[in-house]
Length: 361
Image (cartoon, rainbow, N blue to C red; front, side, top):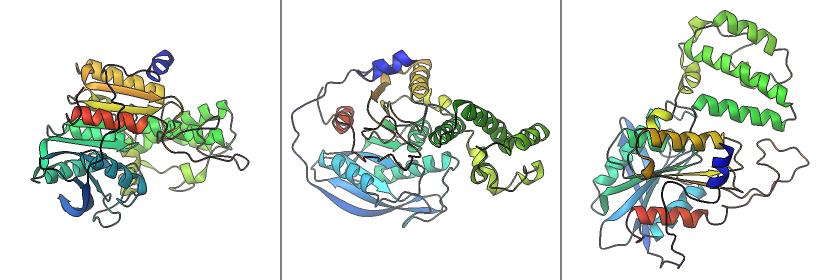
């Protein structure tokens, strides 16, 4: 797996791209405030539209796990860049955020945000200035789960881009990330392994309601450990919650952790770009890269997948100059916030322009 990751940092596998180095002329575009419905929810968006005499391809930019608004600077920059290259871009407030109605949930049933993506697709297909056969979706982090899930639910999505999208279940990613966080706090590898084992047992119980007695014993032991943070494990009380109290909304978080992208990725039949940062400590990068490759191969669609790993990049494909991407930096460590790693945006734009046939190979 490590050799695979090393190889991917210097090359693109499965699909060969010809990157055009000459600067393209920027296309004028306009911004329009839009609204579209997803069931009973009204989503508020901003649409970046190239000025063109022909119908434009379009990309929907979906969210990570935070309460993201379309006013978030990175969303606006990405949308403007695509529009300036001839690709219309739609960004929108996540449900329950900004001007969108509905309820914001940090870790929802991912079929809900995927349904919002499909609502955006339906909206774009009705526009006379958009080519209905060239509508794609791009998502980062949690959005890297949502984008392919939406594509698996509809044949109306023409391409998929996943930025730092885990190839593992939500539960595995959450436990992995938590392990890196307590490592940053100075806990030993033994402590991290012990905590992760407990989290697996606890999350399985909270999501299924099975194994109460065994989990209660593990809880009693874990409470005496220095790594047992009340805000993480004891947020529902001092003692383990009994089974009859679990079928409530408070415990939906644990049930939503069960989402596994593998069956979804096996069903993707459209051109797909998956980008990772080799120094990302939010997700298990090497395992995710292998999962993406394996699942597309099993689905018989390996020629549709382009994988790219940037060696000096973190979770946001941002440049990491420190020894590692700190999730909880110590007080004496100064973090230099840098932009994207060199080459990322050119690579991203050229892939989209090739897929949408705005740039010849």
